[in-house]
Each structure stands twice: as C-alpha cells, then as structure tokens.
Image (cartoon, rainbow, N blue to C red):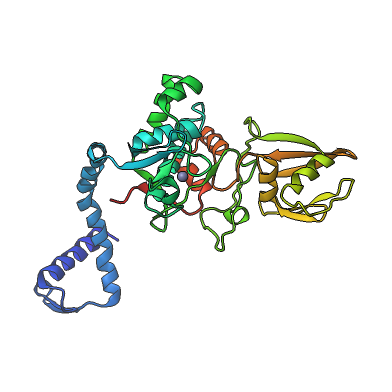
Length: 362
Ligand SMILES: [Zn+2]
C-alpha cells in the first residue's frame, strides 16, 4: 500500500470515527460524494488501524516491562502460606511456613549435587504436592490426625531438618543451594486444567517413565502421568541392581503370600506380559501369577523393570533397572535434562504431559 493510499484510508477512518459507526452509510463532505462501505472496505480499514496501534501501544509495553521487578517485590511481601505438618517419628504436628517446609523436603528428596534447575523442578513438584494435599485433592488428612501433610516418604513426601541434613548429607553451601531452588520458584506450582496436579516422582526411571494406570488400580487414565522416554540415567548409582535367590528361597517368599499353593521342585517361572514402558505387567511363578507391582513389593525390588536369568538349575537372578514406581518425574532424569540445558519449567513439562507451570492462583 502506497503512502498516499494509506493516508487517504486513515482520513476515511477519521471521518468514520467522527461521524459515528452506527451506519455503514457515511457522508464524507470533503469528497462531496456518498460512500457505501462494503465488507472488503472493512478489511482495508482494519489493516492500517492495526498498523497505527503498533505505534500507539509501544510506550505502554515499555511500562509493562518495568513491572516484574515491582511484582517480584510485592510477591515477597505477600503473607506466607502455612501448613500443618505431621512428623510420625516425633509424633508431632507442627505449623510450618510452606516455603521453609519445602527446603526440608527438597533436601530430603534430591541430592544437593544435582543441577540447580533439577532442584527447582523438585521444589515446584514438592510445593504442588503439599498444596494439593492441603486442598484435599489427593489422599486423606485423616491419616495425619488432621494435619495437611506428613514427613513419611512412604505416605507423602520426605522431609529433613537443617541440623540433620548438615550431619548427614551436606554443608551450609549445599543447604543454601536448596534454599535458592525454593526461593527462585516461590509460589510456582504445576496445574492441569487449572487444578493442582498430583506430581508423583521417583528416583530413576531406567529409560522410560510409567503410565500411572500400570501401577495403581485406577479406572481412568491420568492425562499428565503418561509414559515418556527419559534421557540416559545409567550413570546414576541407583540405575541397576541384581539380587540372587535359590529356587527354594524364592518359593518360600511367594508362599508367605500364597501359603496353600504347591510349587514344582525345579525352577518354573517366567515374565508373562510387559507394560508399555517395558516394565513387568505380570509374572508367573509355578501356578501363581501376580502383577509386577506385587512381585516388586514382595521381594523388595527397586523397580518393576525386571530381567530374569538363571545362572544355575537352582538359582534365579533378578536384575532391576531404575529405582521407584516410575510414574511422573524421574529425579535422575531431571538432573540429566538440566545438564543438557533444560530449565525447571521444561523439565516439569517434559515429565508431566500437557501441564501449566504457573503462580498459585490467589
Ligand atoms: Zn502423609
């Protein structure tokens, strides 16, 4: 469009605005002729108007760009969210500031040597986990004597005091690194459909995470807890473990759960089916068939990613790959991704499909 036609169109827009927009029939006195504005004319009117708006709104954008620092300041002045935390080892319920409690959770759940972005991802997952339970979305507070959350890693998420952490896991600079991960993600949570997710996580996926339906008897699929490939986690210490049993020993263990079953005297067991992530869905021992999850629990295995081998006619070797139930975020995978340059937000979106990472809705 030439400058002349642009100015002419702008002139028409000015008249259009000044003369009112209720009618498409406008008398423009300057050109001494009636103008009937058609649909295609409206397109011609909108294009230069958008062009003009670009110039008009630019100074406002510059103002907007100044706001995050002010918001940041405001954010830190907001009243602290508090939680009631049940500590079963001390039989105590204490009220704790959410962000302070989270430092103890991240310190207990992830090694301080992990990349800062991985620690941040863990902090956001831990915050989402705690707030989701405080809201009553997942699990019952009845098992905490009414407290929002507990420090039992087998029930909620682990937690460690600063004193204990300094004795066992790290030094002041490690603690400060974890505090930074929590502070830098203050008020950030993970949501799906505007609801806090159940941000399950585990230590090492062994190469792929698991669909939640393969681990727990839930009727509906959880859209954000699907199986995803995970970066190579074989360099982490929890990756692989082998346990050796004699056939008789193995049978004795199975009989604790199936006492009335008879088993053959020589080895008779096989993996019958695998899940989509390559973990054991079902395994047969003699005439007993159990799920991979039940087998893992019975033998205290690290995961259901199981390889069976038989080094002799009497012995069974069970090798597990990865550590944990395999659902949601892999902590070793989070560290591996962070070292590849992923941000904490990228990591969370990688493991929890289709989620948003955003500030807590006020
Ligand atoms: Zn709990």
